[in-house]
Image 1 (tube, helix red, strand yellow):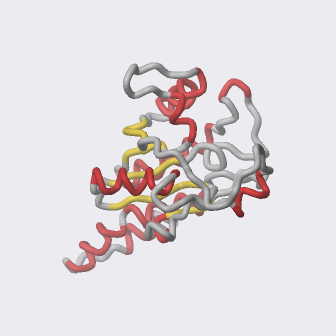
Image 2: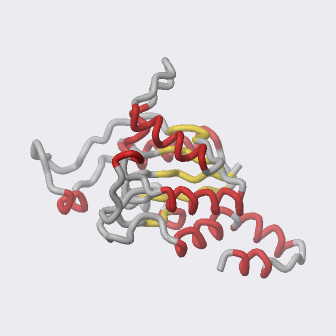
Length: 196
């Protein structure tokens, strides 16, 4: 199994796209996710705070989660799973509110927050390969996932997931496959050209 760990804000949304009907999710970004899935066969694991809109125990879904799910289905995609919630504890003292610009100075205690949630999912499911699509660093290097992390940007008006990110994701997800092909003497250049 291959897995895409998907954040929403900053990956499927960005500062330059507004649409209340889609909760500011850009359908073009979902189509880019679809391209990754088509080229790799990966499943989508939701890591975003948007997962809080789905209660695994009761099956209840908030409106914003339903919109995400609907947009995914329109593009032939589905959310395979969501990561467990492991509340973040911060190393720094936190004020009641902080600016988005200050987020880069906030660090989670190891074993808490999104980094730990992804780590738990990987250890529980043992995917063959995975990629993390997220605009924020959740301690990916601390967990050894820096090579799987593709950082997008919410702030860029043309931000969120881009075509170059898609190419990188496909290479990361198909890495083991390409290594097996090389070991078997199969030329993987066709695979590489498909990603360009």
